[in-house]
Amino acid sequence: MNYDNAKQARYYNKIEESKVHCFLCPHNCIIKPEMTGACRARKNIGGELFSLNYGLVTSLSLDPIEKKPLRRFHPGSLILSAGSFGCNLKCSFCQNWTIAHQDADTATVAPQALVSKAMSLKAKGNIGIAYTYNEPSIWYEFVHDTCVFAKKEGLSNVLVTNGFISHEPLMGILPFIDAMNIDVKAFTSGFYKDICKGILDNVKESVELASQHCHVEVTTLVIPDLNDSLDEIERLSKWLSSISPDIPLHLSRFFPNYKMSHVNPTPKETLFAAKKVADNYLNHVYLGNI
Image (cartoon, rainbow, N blue to C red):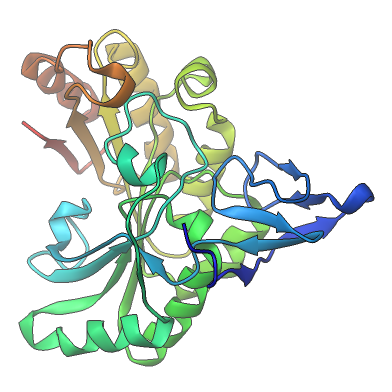
């Protein structure tokens, strides 16, 4: 992959032996020279940390806002959706694993050019830019720069994210974000540790912080025998309700993918039962992939 567009990263410190400490996300990677962090998108080059995916786009599409999914943010509108490569989680069920965990073809797009593209689509109903498909938080420098230009043009900025980002960078970008869909992949620490290689508490903090600054909706992919117990759905729903009962929750049906091709699709009856539980605590519960 061509790294000619590499841009100096934010949120890192230089440490001994030309290593760097990246604190963009809670992995807090210590990265040796010429190595990348867990996300594959940030590399130590000569004792400095660089973003490898700055301006590199793998996917670009004008999508219905409901596809993000956002059901209560400008319903019926369209949004220009852009993604890059890499991810800071390692979910065994990843739906976009070809760009998250493998090398993918890219096109080079400057922040101003992406904003201009979004502006040109306003006549078709486009309201802004959604940073999605792969994990936008590890595309941080490009997303932040583009968000600044987009806001100046009156466009909406949307993050579709796993929420696994450190406090300081999250607070640094929230002033430019209008809406977020945050994956809460399960409501047990064990699931995050074993299935995603992440930490639930950090994701919960992101939901709590983001909900104070922008419109937030939450998605949970319900996977048979892993996070589908009604007790877990109830605890998730109660927690969201404690933030606000108006936070929409999307309960999405699992289909076999990536390293979980052997797991059967979620029975529809499981989702219907989960929605019934969640409805006791939340005002807006939606089922996806039914």
